[in-house]
Amino acid sequence: MSKKSLPRWSWALPVVFLCFCLCSCSAIFHEHEWQEATCVEAKICVDCGDLKGKPLGHDWEEATCSAPKTCRRCGAAEGERIEHEWTPATCLEPELCTLCGQRQGEPLGHSPLNADWKTTKEPSCQAEGERGNVCSVCDAPLIEPISMIDCQAGDWEIVQQPSAEAEGVRVRRCSMCGEEMERETIAQTAGAANTGNTKGSDGNFNKYDNKEQQQTSANYVLNQSTKKFHKPSCRDVPKIAPKNYAVSNESRDALVAQGYSACGHCHR
Image 1 (cartoon, one colour):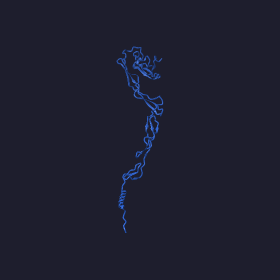
Image 2 (cartoon, rainbow, N blue to C red; image 1 turned 135 degrees about the vertical axis):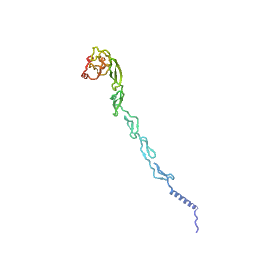
Image 3 (cartoon, rainbow, N blue to C red; image 1 turned 30 degrees about the horizontal axis):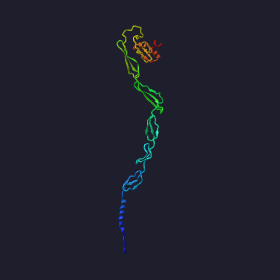
């Protein structure tokens, strides 16, 4: 019985089998090196390209007034940003977006209700005053400062009586703070003795002619010797001896109650 001869290509079978085994072993024993999944791609082996699992998908942060919808993970953007929602400006605040808190423009500022401000604190030479009003828009109370004023001169005050030996001194002080504003000397008195034709126990008439004594804003000038009260413009006021000179804003009745009587020249 004769043997059949093998085909010529049969010699290649062992080689093919060996290659198959080698490839199978490589596939069986290969260890993947995975690259982490992204928003749009699954895990992928950097060596062989095999895929595993699913893409993560975008993690969207909602659109704001300054940016469209944006992925927190990869930064991808989608759509458009939203528009600001502005609240109107007020006296104290500019326009405000209720969505993002952004401000724009300037506050309106207060508008006084009327032009007649009410003085709530008078100014002085030492402190500012205040005046008030109300805002016509928001009803808030408005307060403004009033500038300080200059010192206001009061009446002359005799601080040293004149005599036959020395001049006298008188000063004017600020009626608000008491600071001395002016100082003047008063002429010496005559040295001669009193020889009659005088009024009052010390003979003060016809010796003096101090017209400055009429320069007072008080209601009355008093002669403390004769116990008469005069109007500042009275012709007898300059003749009052400085030591007997005084001023008063009291009423006529109050002076009469103190023992004074009206001058016959200026109270006719």
